Length: 246
Image 1 (cartoon, rainbow, N blue to C red):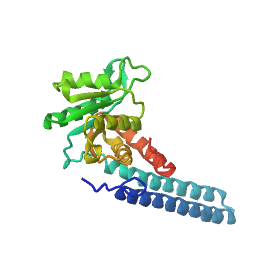
Image 2: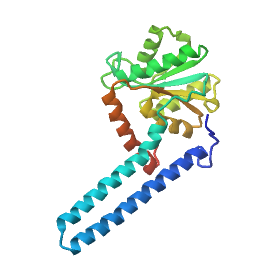
Image 3: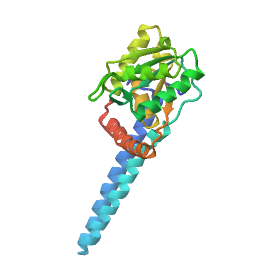
Image 4: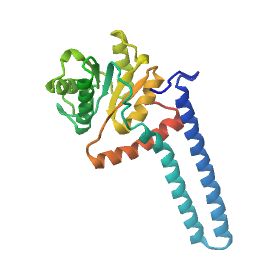
Protein backbone atom coordinates (compact mmCIF):
# COMPACT_ATOMS: atom_id res chain seq x y z
CA UNK A 1 0.00 0.00 0.00
CA UNK A 2 1.37 3.40 -0.91
CA UNK A 3 2.09 6.11 1.67
CA UNK A 4 -1.03 8.24 1.79
CA UNK A 5 -0.06 10.72 4.49
CA UNK A 6 -2.07 13.85 3.68
CA UNK A 7 -0.17 16.90 2.55
CA UNK A 8 -1.23 20.42 3.56
CA UNK A 9 -3.36 20.60 0.42
CA UNK A 10 -5.33 17.57 1.51
CA UNK A 11 -3.93 15.13 -1.06
CA UNK A 12 -1.18 12.50 -0.50
CA UNK A 13 2.39 13.73 -0.83
CA UNK A 14 3.20 11.18 -3.51
CA UNK A 15 0.09 12.15 -5.48
CA UNK A 16 1.07 15.82 -5.28
CA UNK A 17 4.51 14.87 -6.57
CA UNK A 18 3.01 13.07 -9.58
CA UNK A 19 0.59 15.91 -10.16
CA UNK A 20 3.33 18.53 -10.17
CA UNK A 21 5.55 16.39 -12.37
CA UNK A 22 2.86 15.78 -14.99
CA UNK A 23 1.79 19.43 -15.00
CA UNK A 24 5.35 20.64 -15.47
CA UNK A 25 5.97 18.10 -18.21
CA UNK A 26 2.80 19.07 -20.05
CA UNK A 27 3.50 22.77 -19.77
CA UNK A 28 7.08 22.27 -20.90
CA UNK A 29 6.02 20.28 -23.93
CA UNK A 30 3.43 22.89 -24.88
CA UNK A 31 5.98 25.71 -24.65
CA UNK A 32 8.48 23.66 -26.63
CA UNK A 33 5.87 22.94 -29.29
CA UNK A 34 4.94 26.61 -29.55
CA UNK A 35 8.59 27.62 -30.02
CA UNK A 36 9.11 24.95 -32.66
CA UNK A 37 5.99 26.06 -34.50
CA UNK A 38 7.12 29.68 -34.46
CA UNK A 39 10.64 28.86 -35.67
CA UNK A 40 9.41 26.48 -38.35
CA UNK A 41 6.84 28.92 -39.63
CA UNK A 42 9.36 31.75 -39.69
CA UNK A 43 11.82 29.67 -41.70
CA UNK A 44 9.19 28.59 -44.17
CA UNK A 45 7.75 32.06 -44.65
CA UNK A 46 11.15 33.72 -44.95
CA UNK A 47 12.03 31.43 -47.85
CA UNK A 48 8.64 31.83 -49.47
CA UNK A 49 7.79 28.16 -48.96
CA UNK A 50 4.33 28.43 -47.48
CA UNK A 51 3.51 24.74 -47.92
CA UNK A 52 6.72 23.78 -46.14
CA UNK A 53 5.90 26.12 -43.25
CA UNK A 54 2.42 24.66 -42.89
CA UNK A 55 3.84 21.14 -43.00
CA UNK A 56 6.27 21.95 -40.22
CA UNK A 57 3.54 23.53 -38.13
CA UNK A 58 1.23 20.56 -38.60
CA UNK A 59 3.97 18.03 -37.87
CA UNK A 60 5.09 19.77 -34.71
CA UNK A 61 1.54 20.15 -33.44
CA UNK A 62 0.82 16.47 -34.03
CA UNK A 63 4.01 15.43 -32.22
CA UNK A 64 3.28 17.77 -29.32
CA UNK A 65 -0.24 16.40 -29.08
CA UNK A 66 1.02 12.83 -28.92
CA UNK A 67 3.53 13.72 -26.21
CA UNK A 68 1.00 15.56 -24.07
CA UNK A 69 -1.52 12.72 -24.51
CA UNK A 70 1.13 10.25 -23.33
CA UNK A 71 1.89 12.37 -20.26
CA UNK A 72 -1.73 12.15 -19.11
CA UNK A 73 -2.28 8.57 -20.23
CA UNK A 74 0.65 7.22 -18.20
CA UNK A 75 -1.03 7.53 -14.76
CA UNK A 76 -4.27 6.07 -16.15
CA UNK A 77 -2.43 2.98 -17.37
CA UNK A 78 -0.27 2.81 -14.24
CA UNK A 79 -3.30 2.55 -11.96
CA UNK A 80 -5.29 0.17 -14.18
CA UNK A 81 -4.58 -2.82 -11.97
CA UNK A 82 -5.60 -4.44 -8.70
CA UNK A 83 -3.56 -3.58 -5.61
CA UNK A 84 -2.94 -7.21 -4.73
CA UNK A 85 -1.12 -6.51 -1.45
CA UNK A 86 -4.18 -4.90 0.14
CA UNK A 87 -7.15 -6.80 1.60
CA UNK A 88 -9.51 -4.19 3.06
CA UNK A 89 -12.55 -5.32 5.00
CA UNK A 90 -14.88 -3.04 3.04
CA UNK A 91 -15.28 -2.40 -0.68
CA UNK A 92 -17.28 0.08 -2.71
CA UNK A 93 -18.58 -1.05 -6.10
CA UNK A 94 -19.04 1.96 -8.36
CA UNK A 95 -22.17 1.87 -10.50
CA UNK A 96 -22.47 1.84 -14.27
CA UNK A 97 -25.45 1.90 -16.57
CA UNK A 98 -28.57 -0.25 -16.20
CA UNK A 99 -30.62 -1.14 -19.26
CA UNK A 100 -34.10 -1.11 -17.79
CA UNK A 101 -33.44 -3.46 -14.91
CA UNK A 102 -30.58 -5.39 -16.55
CA UNK A 103 -26.96 -4.54 -15.67
CA UNK A 104 -24.91 -3.20 -18.57
CA UNK A 105 -21.74 -4.96 -19.67
CA UNK A 106 -19.60 -2.47 -17.76
CA UNK A 107 -21.62 -3.08 -14.60
CA UNK A 108 -21.34 -6.86 -15.02
CA UNK A 109 -17.57 -6.54 -15.39
CA UNK A 110 -17.39 -4.57 -12.15
CA UNK A 111 -19.71 -6.97 -10.34
CA UNK A 112 -17.68 -9.98 -11.43
CA UNK A 113 -14.56 -8.34 -9.96
CA UNK A 114 -16.51 -7.67 -6.76
CA UNK A 115 -17.69 -11.28 -6.63
CA UNK A 116 -14.15 -12.58 -6.93
CA UNK A 117 -13.03 -10.32 -4.08
CA UNK A 118 -15.98 -11.15 -1.83
CA UNK A 119 -15.52 -14.88 -2.40
CA UNK A 120 -11.84 -14.59 -1.51
CA UNK A 121 -12.57 -12.39 1.53
CA UNK A 122 -15.70 -13.88 3.17
CA UNK A 123 -15.83 -11.29 5.97
CA UNK A 124 -15.73 -8.27 3.65
CA UNK A 125 -18.67 -5.87 3.41
CA UNK A 126 -19.71 -4.38 0.05
CA UNK A 127 -21.35 -1.01 -0.58
CA UNK A 128 -22.97 -0.98 -4.02
CA UNK A 129 -23.25 2.62 -5.13
CA UNK A 130 -25.39 4.23 -7.81
CA UNK A 131 -28.68 6.08 -8.17
CA UNK A 132 -31.29 5.86 -10.90
CA UNK A 133 -30.68 7.55 -14.21
CA UNK A 134 -32.59 8.07 -17.42
CA UNK A 135 -33.71 4.80 -19.01
CA UNK A 136 -33.16 2.88 -15.78
CA UNK A 137 -36.18 1.19 -14.18
CA UNK A 138 -34.36 0.57 -10.91
CA UNK A 139 -31.40 2.11 -9.15
CA UNK A 140 -27.93 0.94 -10.05
CA UNK A 141 -27.48 -0.05 -6.40
CA UNK A 142 -30.52 -2.31 -6.58
CA UNK A 143 -29.36 -3.91 -9.83
CA UNK A 144 -25.95 -4.62 -8.33
CA UNK A 145 -27.35 -6.01 -5.09
CA UNK A 146 -29.66 -8.33 -7.05
CA UNK A 147 -26.73 -9.54 -9.17
CA UNK A 148 -24.53 -10.26 -6.18
CA UNK A 149 -27.21 -12.12 -4.23
CA UNK A 150 -28.12 -14.12 -7.34
CA UNK A 151 -24.48 -15.22 -7.48
CA UNK A 152 -24.39 -16.41 -3.88
CA UNK A 153 -23.42 -13.37 -1.80
CA UNK A 154 -25.35 -13.06 1.46
CA UNK A 155 -27.54 -9.94 1.40
CA UNK A 156 -26.30 -9.12 4.92
CA UNK A 157 -22.89 -8.35 3.36
CA UNK A 158 -24.35 -5.83 0.91
CA UNK A 159 -25.33 -2.21 1.61
CA UNK A 160 -27.09 -0.17 -1.06
CA UNK A 161 -26.19 3.49 -1.65
CA UNK A 162 -28.88 4.56 -4.13
CA UNK A 163 -28.69 8.36 -4.36
CA UNK A 164 -25.45 9.18 -6.15
CA UNK A 165 -25.22 10.39 -9.74
CA UNK A 166 -21.46 10.95 -10.15
CA UNK A 167 -18.27 9.17 -9.10
CA UNK A 168 -17.59 11.80 -6.46
CA UNK A 169 -21.08 11.33 -5.01
CA UNK A 170 -20.58 7.54 -5.11
CA UNK A 171 -17.57 7.95 -2.87
CA UNK A 172 -18.88 10.69 -0.59
CA UNK A 173 -22.15 8.88 0.11
CA UNK A 174 -20.53 5.47 0.48
CA UNK A 175 -17.89 6.79 2.89
CA UNK A 176 -20.68 8.34 4.98
CA UNK A 177 -22.43 4.96 5.14
CA UNK A 178 -19.23 3.19 6.18
CA UNK A 179 -18.44 5.76 8.86
CA UNK A 180 -21.97 5.46 10.24
CA UNK A 181 -21.37 1.71 10.56
CA UNK A 182 -18.09 2.17 12.41
CA UNK A 183 -15.68 1.74 9.49
CA UNK A 184 -13.06 4.37 8.74
CA UNK A 185 -12.14 4.64 5.03
CA UNK A 186 -8.84 6.19 6.13
CA UNK A 187 -7.87 2.72 7.40
CA UNK A 188 -8.36 1.18 3.96
CA UNK A 189 -11.23 0.64 1.55
CA UNK A 190 -11.42 -1.22 -1.74
CA UNK A 191 -12.64 0.64 -4.82
CA UNK A 192 -14.13 -1.68 -7.45
CA UNK A 193 -14.42 -0.10 -10.87
CA UNK A 194 -13.31 -0.53 -14.46
CA UNK A 195 -9.56 -0.65 -14.82
CA UNK A 196 -9.41 2.53 -16.90
CA UNK A 197 -11.37 4.42 -14.21
CA UNK A 198 -9.21 3.56 -11.21
CA UNK A 199 -6.80 6.49 -11.53
CA UNK A 200 -9.52 9.11 -11.17
CA UNK A 201 -11.52 7.11 -8.62
CA UNK A 202 -8.52 6.59 -6.34
CA UNK A 203 -7.50 10.24 -6.58
CA UNK A 204 -10.99 11.30 -5.59
CA UNK A 205 -11.02 8.81 -2.72
CA UNK A 206 -7.73 10.17 -1.39
CA UNK A 207 -8.99 13.74 -1.62
CA UNK A 208 -11.92 12.67 0.57
CA UNK A 209 -9.62 11.28 3.26
CA UNK A 210 -9.64 7.59 2.34
CA UNK A 211 -6.83 5.10 1.82
CA UNK A 212 -8.06 3.36 -1.35
CA UNK A 213 -7.02 0.00 -2.74
CA UNK A 214 -7.87 -0.49 -6.38
CA UNK A 215 -9.80 -3.58 -7.47
CA UNK A 216 -9.70 -3.58 -11.25
CA UNK A 217 -12.61 -4.86 -13.30
CA UNK A 218 -11.43 -5.98 -16.73
CA UNK A 219 -13.38 -4.44 -19.58
CA UNK A 220 -14.15 -7.52 -21.62
CA UNK A 221 -15.07 -5.80 -24.90
CA UNK A 222 -11.77 -4.75 -26.57
CA UNK A 223 -13.22 -1.86 -28.57
CA UNK A 224 -14.83 -0.46 -25.43
CA UNK A 225 -11.59 -0.83 -23.48
CA UNK A 226 -9.58 1.10 -26.08
CA UNK A 227 -12.22 3.83 -26.33
CA UNK A 228 -12.43 4.37 -22.59
CA UNK A 229 -8.67 4.34 -22.03
CA UNK A 230 -8.36 7.12 -24.63
CA UNK A 231 -11.24 9.04 -23.07
CA UNK A 232 -9.73 8.78 -19.60
CA UNK A 233 -6.56 10.53 -20.75
CA UNK A 234 -8.62 13.59 -21.66
CA UNK A 235 -10.58 13.33 -18.41
CA UNK A 236 -7.29 13.14 -16.49
CA UNK A 237 -5.97 16.15 -18.38
CA UNK A 238 -9.06 18.17 -17.51
CA UNK A 239 -8.87 17.06 -13.89
CA UNK A 240 -5.17 17.92 -13.73
CA UNK A 241 -5.25 21.31 -15.41
CA UNK A 242 -8.58 22.54 -14.01
CA UNK A 243 -7.89 21.17 -10.54
CA UNK A 244 -11.33 19.56 -10.56
CA UNK A 245 -12.17 16.16 -9.10
CA UNK A 246 -15.43 14.85 -10.49
